[in-house]
Length: 87
Ligand SMILES: [Zn+2]
Image (cartoon, rainbow, N blue to C red):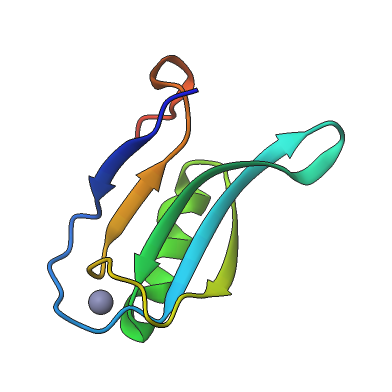
């Protein structure tokens, strides 16, 4: 299992309030595997949800106030081999 740090394409200095987690199915559960998390401000929650959905993942928002991340920071837990490349 690898962890990669990435950023979304947009540039934003907004305060991060939400972590948009991305899940893929595992063990018959739609939220079986946590694959990645994007940290975003309120204006970019939908952007992050769209990002995960275009990769076939199920987005789930959790509260992330006080995070030290910048808006658009991504932590990706997927193995590089199995990562879905954005179209
Ligand atoms: Zn933002």
